[in-house]
Image: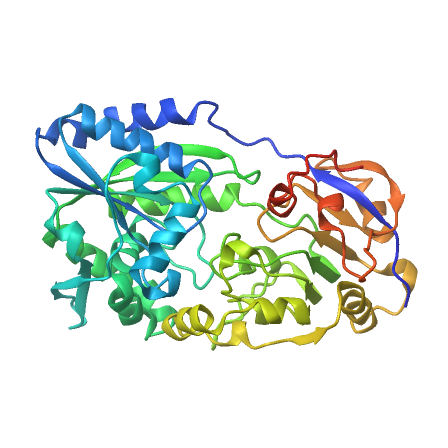
Length: 436
C-alpha cells in the first residue's frame, strides 16, 4: 500500500461568535441577578478549571474587575478535581499556562487540595467541597458548557460538573468516578443540588464555543436557574460542536492528542469511539483505524486517551509521564481508553501500518483524513476518494491541489506545514498560509 496524495479542505459553517469578549463578560455579570445581591467587603471565590477555554484569562480579568467595582474582594480557586497530578503545585502550574496566575491577575490563586464534607446525598454518599471556596462569602465559576467525553446525560461538562467534581477536589472526583458513568450521569446532579443548598455558590458564567473555537455565547446562570438552564445550554453546545465532515473513514491520522484538546485526549464525540466499559460506541462517524502521532507538551505527560487510537509512535509513548497518567486514569476509572497501542519508530511507519490494516486494499477507494488534533477541525487534509465527495458538497471548500504529505529526514510528519494555524504550529511561531 502506498501513501496517497492529499488535498486541503475547509469546513464552512455559519455560527454565532462574540466579537468583543471582554465587553460581553462585563455585560453578562452586570445583567445578572447576582449583581443586585452583592455587598461591599464580601470575599468572592472564582472557580476556574483545567479545560482549555479560549480567552479564559480575559474572562477572568473582567470578572475580577466586576467584583472589585462592587467593592468585593475576589480571588481564584482551582476547580479541577484530580487534574494536575492531584496536587497544589500541579494545579497552580496548569492554571498559570492559561494566564491564570497571581502575577497576571493581581489576586490570590488558591490551589491547595483541602476539602470539607458538607453533607450527604440521597444515595448516602458524602459531598466534598473546596475549603477555600466554602470559606468565601460568594462563589462563582467560569465554566464551559460542552458535551462530555465519558457519558450522556442532562448535565455533562459545565457548571454542575465543576461544582460537584471540580470543586470536589480529588475526593469529590474519586467519589463520583468510582461508579463509572453512573456516578457522573446519576449521582453528580444530586451532589450539585446539595451544593446549591449548603454552600455560598451564587452563579456561574456559562461559556459556549463554536466549531472554530471562538466564543459563541456568554451567560451568567443564577443558582436558582441552574438545574433547568444548563440542559438547554448543553443542547446548544451539541449543535455548535466541531465534527468530522465524513460519516465513514478507513484511516484517521491525528497529529497530536492531549488534555488541552479534550479531557479524553482524543475527543470521543469527534471520532465516534466512546470506549467506556459496558457502554456502546457512537454510530457516527465509523472509523476503522486511527493513528495518533504525538502528545502535546501542554498535557505534561498525561497521555490519557492514547488507547482510543489503534496505532501510535514510540515518541508519543516515551512522552507519557506515568505519575499524572496513572493518577488521572485511576481516579477517573475509565481504563480502556488508556491501554497502550502498537507503537512505531516514526510517523511514516505508523501511517503505512494504518493503511495496511484499515480493511481497504483498493488504493483508489481509500478514505483517509489528517487532522492536527480532535479540537481544531476547520481544516483537514483528505485523500482523493474524499476529495471527490467534498467537491459535491456546499459545506466543504477545496483549497489547492493534491500533494504529498511532508515528512522530515526522520520520517516524521511536518505538522506545522500542514496546519500552520494550529496549536502545534503556534509553538514554533509559524504563521504560514495552509498551502505553504
